[in-house]
Structures are given as structure tokens and as C-alpha cells.
Length: 75
Picture 1 (cartoon, rainbow, N blue to C red):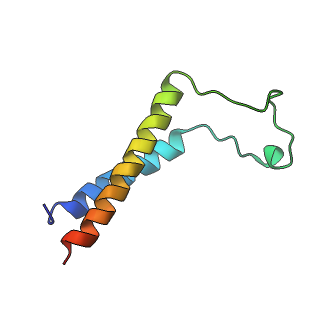
Picture 2 (picture 1 turned 90 degrees about the vertical axis):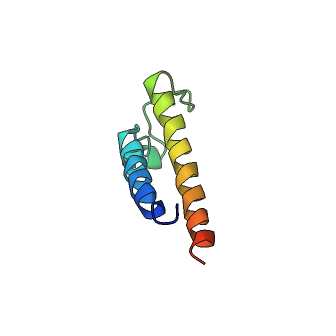
């Protein structure tokens, strides 16, 4: 298992990068100064965007778990 862990981390890191890049960016320059296009100030994710957000969180948690596991298995 310790030999496969770096490969698992590479795959998880690529999935994490892809998940983050596919998400909608709400932090434009205009919203940094309070001039975003939404009047309510709150945005709800729905459908595929919500699923992608949840999968990105799952992949990030799995990546963190494998990183901690590699610390303990390296000894």
C-alpha cells in the first residue's frame, strides 16, 4: 500500500485541480469592491454545480487523508 500511495495522491491532486477549475468563480475584481451582479448577496448552488462542489470537498478530504497516511507509513 505504501508503494501505491504516491500514485493515488497524484490522481487525487489532478482531480482536485480539475474540480476547483470547473467551479464558478465568484471572486471577480468587481465583487472584491462590493459591486457584484447579485442583489441578494447569497448564492445557492444547484444541480451539477452542487454535485461538483461536494465531490471537490470529498476529493480534498481524501487527499488530506492520504497525505497524513503517507506520513505514518513512511517510517
